[in-house]
Each structure stands twice: as C-alpha cells, then as structure tokens.
Length: 208
Image (cartoon, rainbow, N blue to C red):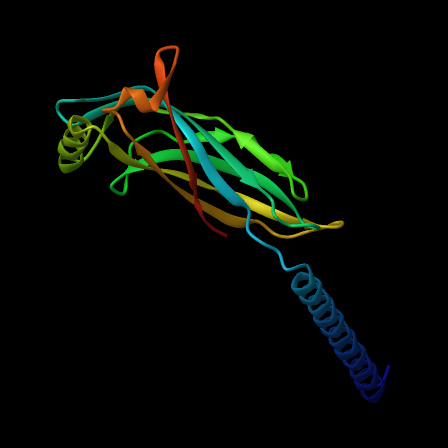
C-alpha cells in the first residue's frame, strides 16, 4: 500500500470518527433535553416528614458528662407526587442536642414509596454511656431540672426518584425534626410500659 493510499484511509477513518462523536453528542443532548422537559412537567416535590411522637424509656446524665438514652420516635413520610416514586436506599436516624450527636445511628430498612403513599417508621434511637461535651452535659442537666428539653431528631440518607421506568442517580436526603419534650410534666405524656410517650406532631425540614 502506497503512502498516498494509507493517508487516504486515515482521513476516512478520522471523518467517520468525527461523525460518530457528533452523533453521540447530539443524541445525549436530545436525551438530556427530554429528561429536563419531563422533569419540569412533572414538577417533583420533596417528601414531607412529620415527627408524630417520642417515647422516653431512658434519659440519664451522669458524671462526668455521660449520657444514657433510649427513645422511640414515630416519623411519617408522605410522597406528594402524583407520578414520581421514591426509593429510600439508605436512611439513618439519630438525635442531637445543641449540634452534638448524642445517640448512635439507627438504620431504617430500604423501602420504596409510591405515588401519594405514606410511610410510618418507629425506630428506637439510643446510646449507652455516650460522652457529651462538658457544657452540653451541664445544659442537659439544667434542662431536665427545668422540666423540658429541646432535641433535634435527624435523618440522613440516600434516595432515588422513579419516573415510569426511569430511575435517577442517588441524591442525599437530610431531614431535621424539632422535638420539644416536657420531662417535668408527666401529665402531658402517656405511660407506655416503662416509658412515657409525648405527642409532638411537628413538621420537619427536608433538603435533597
């Protein structure tokens, strides 16, 4: 094969390669536009979370700044979308006090939430001899003595959206639920075995 023929074949190969690349780019662009249009038409909304109640089985601060707790919370999640489902691939729930995590993570089993469906979870969140910051240990004791405590129940996880047969990549889900617990007034709670249940019915802040 002469040098001229070899150069001609290389030129034809490069031309075909450029056409293939251009075709792939155009296809990907059209696919992206279609997905964005469908997404805009469906107008996806974030799930709505509500913390319904908290049952306190144990909440004891001991020196030096050690906390032992056992709390069962009831949390509902509602999917407000008509045509979009939600895969909860991972969901961990835990309690914080003044920005410090004071319980272990409790995993909620993976689940799928259909259109307009409501899921109810009642996980136990607990910690045994969990060290807390000295100033938080003092504040916890003072709050308990004062009769009420503000906890923040958080959920962290990964979700995917399902539209027809199409499923998106994973997105991080972060949920913040305020929990005001009036320890000092047992009359506001309901005795459940060795624990006391406090009705909360507080909406949570959700970010995806």
